Image (tube, rainbow, N blue to C red; front, side):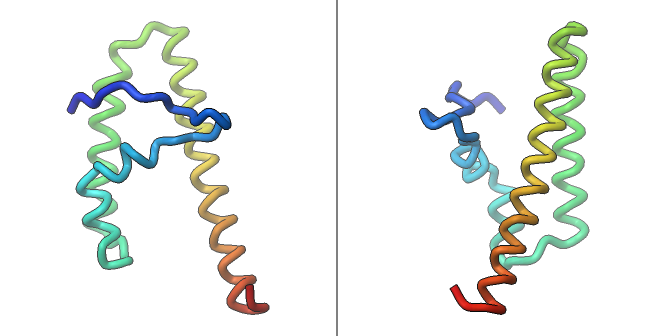
Length: 97
């Protein structure tokens, strides 16, 4: 799937991949009912593995190191952002907003 090139960061230097994510039909379909089931997670994992395989073989060692760092930092950010959001939501439920 080829997408038009767009910047990964906003003018404020914040990640802006949401526009691509909104176009990822399997993602939006999976979120539609508010529950991610095992099959949906497995489908996304397979898509991730396929994308990684498609890219990894095309990278030289320096590019591979950069992309590996990018993937690790993105994963850490996503987990931290999710946990931060869940914590803020729990605090708002417990103590009001």
